[in-house]
Length: 225
Image 1: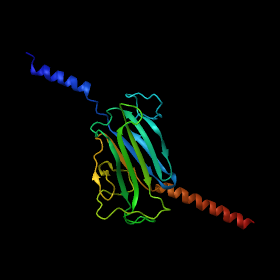
Image 2: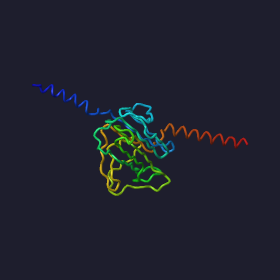
Image 3: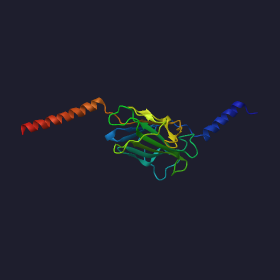
């Protein structure tokens, strides 16, 4: 008769073979700083992240299926991972999960309560390589040339913008802003946003000093002429 301890050990060994390993946490940081554009960084992934080749293998390292695009008001990418990197997601994946940041009161040049930024994620099987997973992401900041947009009355999923990196992992939803349903992202995925980064005081002082110096030089040239 096989002892219970041996049976337990055998079951544990089978589980290790069948179940994919739980990956360490992967963090996606979106930092939007006005004129400097949107900067996207990744934690928990070996850098630099390569672009995917035509023959990417299922157990291969993370790679960009679509290159990382970082612009003034937007950033997009499709990042591919080995299968099992994000366990527990539905069979059809997580499609069109959205999170929104809201402008706080008292911000110069901004309308309180308006939508400041949107992050949209889709997580599921790779559309190109079988056995792999992918994240499709879009970060879209407010465009000052457009009229402010506001969430509907009673909307409870918005995150008030602050001048720091905010963890918005628990604020994603599907169904649109009029009929939102909470979405739980994989436990090992973290999403953070820092919108409208305010320059450090030393940077402001330096820029101010440079402008003042240029003005003084121009004034001296006018006097000498």
